[in-house]
Amino acid sequence: MTDAGIKGLCSLDDFKTGNQNGCKSIHTLRITHTKISKIGIRFALENLPALQCFDSSSVQVLAEMHRAAFERDQSNFPHYSLINLNCYATNESPYVNGSLGLAASLCYLTVVKVDINIVEELTDTDLLGLSVLKRLEELVIRSVVHRNRCPITFDGGIAPLLKAVGDSLKELRLDELKICVNIRTIAEFCPDLRFLSLFRNSSYTLAWPEEAQPVKMRSAFQKMETIHLFGEEHFLWHHREFVDPFEIISSEILLLLLSSPVLKDVSISSCINLSDDILRKSADLHGFYHLEQLKLMGNTTALTNKGIDDVFLKENNPLKRIFLVDCDFLENEHFEKWRKIIDEKNWDSYRTT
Image (spheres, rainbow, N blue to C red):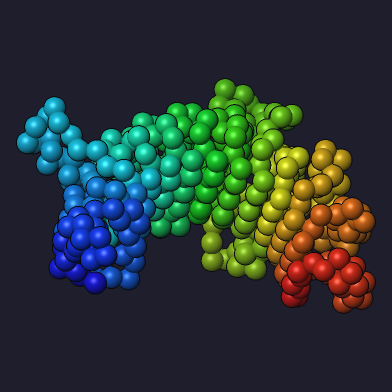
């Protein structure tokens, strides 16, 4: 598929109904792994008025369209029905400062998902341009820059953005950010969060900016159904000479993240502070009565067979799937005991060491 193909698509008739504008009703268009350039992307945006789901890197193109409209008529800007914005810089279309805000202004009434690959040109001010998206439900921010560099900050970019749009957020993913992620800020500003994924970020804190010490929170993440947490500690333990050390995820943060009474899916990898005590304290809060899937990977001797037994392998346990991958505490003899329980309950399971 090329730009010519997009132009042809936009001019096709609906042969069944005789509607000469048949393709004008297209609401989903996927162009991954095609040769469509930003010329074709722009043509699709301009000629498919019903388009909502578009998997292209649309931010730069929308920003250019905004600038062109401004030059023509400062009082009349087009508006689009996109529900997703993707910000992926390419060699053909590098990121230009201010583009996020300009793109958001053309579809601020409809966008519910934003996916950002952080590049060196992106700044805190760019992130704040998304503050107009009051219906935003899903936010993905991942870093693709050098390991030790990050052009954005948490307190200056992510935190103010969450303060502006957090009331509507249902899903948040922060991946490989070379900054300190403030879990308390997320809890404070995103009260209805259902899904949280934290993947190999540099460090985490619970400290409020004006406080010298972290504080405990009693009512956070009460609607969280899914928590995916991938730490860096296991990797660092074996490859410490190749990377700069990352902070260990504290027991206090783990307990807070596991405090939701409606958890359905828990996936934790490479977190050396995950322990029997953390699991028992979490169970004391809510019993894991809704947990359907549990995945533990690369955790250490702070977690034992007894902790899994006491918390998860109970008669009234709602688990449907359990995955144990590269867990040091797991012995063959004990796993065989679990296997009988797993078979009796018809759970899906996977284990490797």
